[in-house]
Amino acid sequence: MDKAKENYSFALCIENKDCEDLEKRKIYQMLPDEEADKEGYLRVIDESGEDYLYPMSYFIVVQLPRKAQEALQLSK
Image (cartoon, rainbow, N blue to C red; front, side):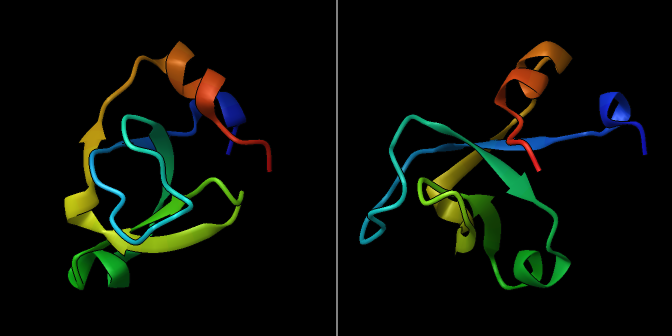
């Protein structure tokens, strides 16, 4: 898929209790994970640069303009 056409999902961190690799009020890139969603978790790329599962309640999913998505996208 063309990188320019990819749809990225982002979440705003609103809680980081017991999670040293999350910062409140920071936007994180989410990765799709249907199993995690069913269990109430989001898979996000945290401050370590790795993707981990965190409680959905720690985030608000946000919709960003395309240019903001591209600016926040982590290189693969």
